[in-house]
Length: 140
Length: 146
Image (cartoon, rainbow over all chains, first blue to last red; front, side, top):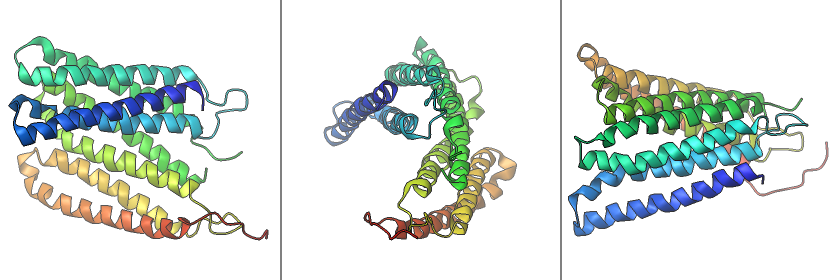
């Protein structure tokens, strides 16, 4: 497995762990009612799981295993993959930090940080699509 | 990669790009509510990414990579998979229309019926794909050369 795929897959595993830690906090809070504000972590749990784990794992495995781009450059331009990796995780973690803060303190500047979070995640996915699109092909 | 898998994976990638773009608009609106009507895209965002992207990608890769039925490399009847892909994508499109129609008062009657049609299309898609994939989920075996 090449370096970029290892980065995607190991980060996906770390996000899986983070997702279930957040999920456990939400569930424990439902049982013991520590603090009502903790229930607002539910969207963070969903997105750590679906973006940080599922999407990122799919990106890593597909970049590793899909048909090669060419004999000389089997993975095409790897820069698209790195841009996707950096932007996806930066965008996701901006959301993880600022979405609950925005819910707890709605009149602060925290909400504005969700805009760069959104832009980074959208950019990341478009970069991944650009990287993988030419590798969706049959045998020549 | 067979042509049908290429088609399904490319459509899944297109849904991925659209689904994240919708999600980005919804998240931005949550942070800075300049255009609150963009919240209407939330349900479309979920359908696009769960069904149009994740399920369709899994179908496309499974059709490509599951064990073949014989030594000729036969993957079985292609037609149920084609109908499955058509039903799946029609279902996602109806779900997108529904999520937008639900926010427009004049279209609320239509929006009530669309989830039923979406559900039926999803069931047809899943049923046909399971029927196709079931016999291909089997242990490794060496077939005599043709």
